[in-house]
Image 1 (cartoon, rainbow, N blue to C red):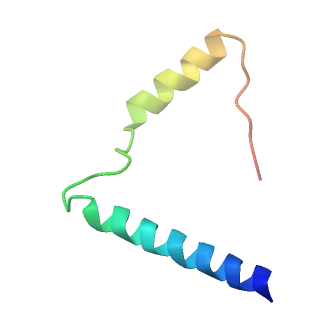
Image 2 (cartoon, rainbow, N blue to C red):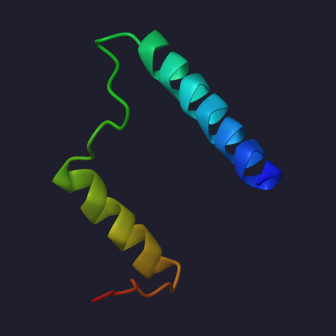
Length: 58
């Protein structure tokens, strides 16, 4: 029972911390700028030149 209470308090504290960090992020922040197609192609060519085959999942 005590372990469950400790885990619950830890989860709540983690939730409050994450919520505070998320609220501090400015509205105009773009987390991951999307790569355009030219960048993707050049990365594929670079990998192929290094002898690394692209992995296909699925």
